[in-house]
Length: 177
Image 1 (cartoon, rainbow, N blue to C red):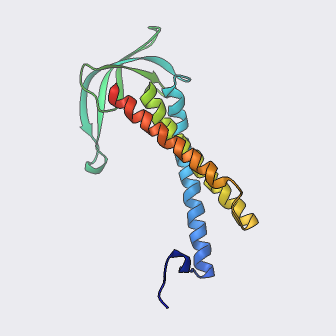
Image 2 (cartoon, rainbow, N blue to C red):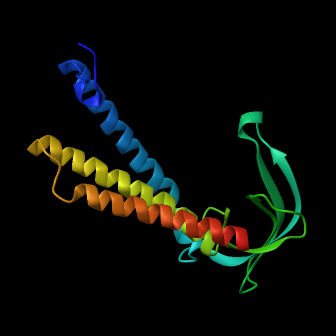
Image 3 (cartoon, rainbow, N blue to C red):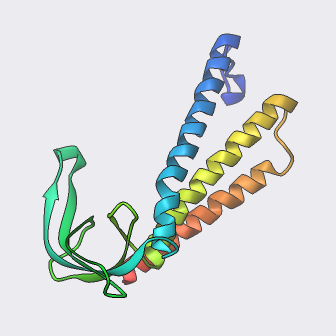
């Protein structure tokens, strides 16, 4: 009998358990990865953490292996209060020598761009992490009750939509600035 759609696709018991385990592991890894990467830089981009100042770019070069190439720029960081000057400041961004732009110096001595574009970019990644956490919670609840919680699809769609809106704002702000 020919298959007529995805509804006809059936996995054996062991294969369906394996598929579920892989799905849950991927959601968990995605959630942790997105939040661990985005939340600290989100706080710096919003200027909630770190030392505010500006970097004046002196030189830039493409560095890294061919598949991991990125532009690394070096220059001088000056904090807004004048207390900190770092003549060996470096940041991985597509910039040009002579550019001056606001950054936040991290507690580890790195630099993160600030402003609407940077904040909304990191917010997008954080919201995607929260969306994956919600999908993970809905999946766990579905396994326990044999059905997804009421409204979980709408909540996940709202989170995902907010993440996409944040990405759009970031892209527009980045293009304008």
